Image (cartoon, rainbow, N blue to C red; front, side, top):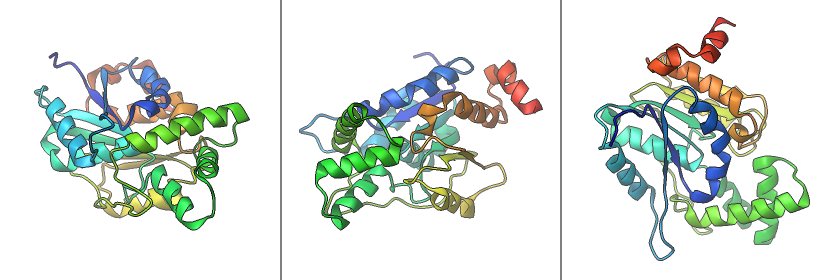
Length: 250
């Protein structure tokens, strides 16, 4: 395999990949980015440990440390990889990952099911509003189907009966945490909780809006922030990027 990738984007499920594509298209103009997707068959169990081992196997094909990035549950996988295999990770960028990394949108869904007398469909519709803002009826129905499939595909073993947790705290390599100021799932307190373990080289940034999938609605803005962060760690394609140079000058 070629040794030319700079960034590996971690996707937690096939159905959510569509919301990553606009950002990845922007990033790919400036760095060599690959996408890793977690998937399992219906008859197989799923776990974040299995996902971490599979990412480690993938990274074993490269002779140099890779910049990892991911959104939501994908970010939780990337974080776990960075902690377990720090020698293989150059830096870490997490989008919409709470300071308790297991607190993904799935937790919000199951908490609503536990607390309120609402049907599965009603909670899914509520989740669409939390994740994407108000949407037309037809769009809401389509997004409900996407979220329903993601509940089945996620490597995080949340359920109505038990909500899992992951260790809190940072990592040894430089880390960037990104979120949205109007995300009700990973809100400002959930993001600022990361500051307790921040190193001088770590960075926290919040998009003014965009809800939970802010990187889908504002891919260029998120891309600019990520490129500026990576530039500090000598990604050569970025150093000559007019987009990054212009932003750093502002």
